[in-house]
Image (tube, rainbow, N blue to C red; front, side):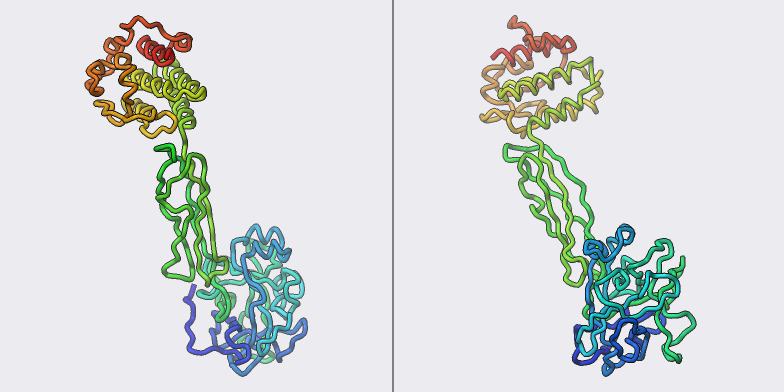
Length: 444
C-alpha cells in the first residue's frame, strides 16, 4: 500500500481544532476530504469529497467511537459473523461535528450494505451501518486501507467505502460516496482511505509464549528465565517492549504460576495489549511421576517402574529419606542394565533420579562428593548407615568412586545376609542386587 501521506497543514475549522479528523482517499489525496453536502446535519445528507479548507465546517468530523470490532460486537453493534471475520481489526464511527459540535450523525449507509448503496449521514451508535472496519493489519492513520461497512454480509468480497469509479470531486453534480465490493487482487485507489487527526492507529499485537514446565531446584521452587514475547506495532518502527509479571529470572514456587505480559502504546487502538502463559515448577511427587512414566517399557521387564513406584509410596508415606535411598538403587539398576538400556536412554534417567534439588527428598545434612556419580547428593548420615549397601569403594568412608555398575560388584550389598523386603520381593523383575538395596532402604 502507498505510504502514509505527510501534510504541512490541517484543514478543519479553528473551533474543531485538534479533535477533528480528516478522512481522504488514495485516489485524490489530502486535497479533497469527506464533506457533509451543503453543511446539512440531517439524517440522509449525502457524503461527498470536497476541496480541503480550514474555513469549511462541512469538513469537520470527529471520532464518535473507536476500538476493535470485538468491542463493537460486545456492545451489540455488529453481527456475530462480522465479529468472527474481523474481531481483531480496528473499527471506527466518524461523526459530523461542524465547528467541533457533535451532531449525533455519523458517516454510514441507510440500509444493509449492498453494491452501490449511497453513503449518507445516519444516527451514530445505533447500528452496524455507521461502523467502518479497517481491513488490514496496517493502520488507518499510517497507511491507505479499505474500510468495510459494519453491516457487511459478503466476506469474500466485502462492501467497502468507495468513491465512484471514473468520477472526480470537481464534477457537478457532486458525486456521492457509496459502498461497493472489494475486488480480488490489487485494490484501486478509490477504495483506499487514510486519516489524519485525533484518531488511534493500528492494532498492537503481542505474541503468545509457550507454557513452561521445569523441575524444582530446591524447596522454594526454581529460578526460571524466559524470553520476552515479540510485540508488533504497525505504527512504530520500534515497537514497545513487553513487560511481564513476574519477571524473567524470578524464583517461581512449586506449582503453577501465571505470567502476564503487556505491551503499551497510547497511539494504538487496542493498547494495552496483553497475553499470558504459565510456568509450572514440579516438586518431588510430580518429578517422580514423570520418571515413572519415562521408564515404562524401558529395560528388563518392569524393574525400573517397580523401583520408582516404591519411591513414590515412600514419599507419599512421609519417608523422603527412604525414597532417596530407593532412587539410589534405581540408578544402580539402570547402570546394571546397560547395554540392554542404551546409554543415550540411561543418561537422562540417571540425571532425573539424581536431581540434586528434588524437594522433599533432600535429607537436611551436608552433601558429600560423589565420584563417578558427580552431582547426586549423598548425605553424611546416609554414608554412616548405608556404607556397604551401595557400591564398592563406599567402605572407604570418603566418597563414592570408581563404581562401574557391574552385577557382581553390585551384588555385594547382599553380603550382610539381609533378604529383600516384601515390597521388593513382590516385584520379580527387579534384579537381585536392587532387591537387596530396597530391603535395606525399607527396613530402617
